[in-house]
Image (cartoon, helix red, strand yellow):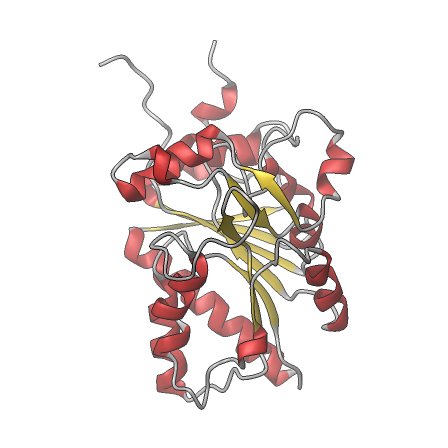
Length: 276
């Protein structure tokens, strides 16, 4: 039998949980929503007389060019804003893949965001942060020095992962939620779905990665997640209405006091399960 959560209609997504669900019309509107939410976080902190600290992803959509354009148009100075990217692919010997590698998240952030922002407005180089596989504990120290993370932005993987926090059946849910920034193996599910970006050639996708931990994500003041892929219609239902478990990391957002999930209308539609 199929799990009951797969039949939850769009109108009931998130009901009975702490997660606020918003449905947008298409992929472009999700990108606009991510950029607007990031912009609002930065402006909101400035109104309080401080600079924001955000954990950010590369995906799930091309929000960064939109954000860069808005920052330039509004002349919003973000030099002292700290952006902590969630993760990066590693070589087999646990070094960052080369920044000019086509799959490098560091390279992506330069091309699609930092290089597009007016240099007078852009974050200082030291505020453009990626977890270092050789110094994983630095992320926690940085966050503590900044007084915490204002918001974590991200998407949800095929197996329910957040950042590259892959499902884990070997430890308790409590211990899983406390996992810090670390180096880990990527699951075959993650590597397979990510290989879509390279024409389905899974051998190109690295097997190792460094990721911001569940601890840092769950301790952020706000969680803002987004889904825009058709295959996520089942994943979001498992996240919102399946068990809260380390087998589905994003389900832990239901324990957070201020979490939201913004999805495209085609993701909100229940999955059609049939043989063809």
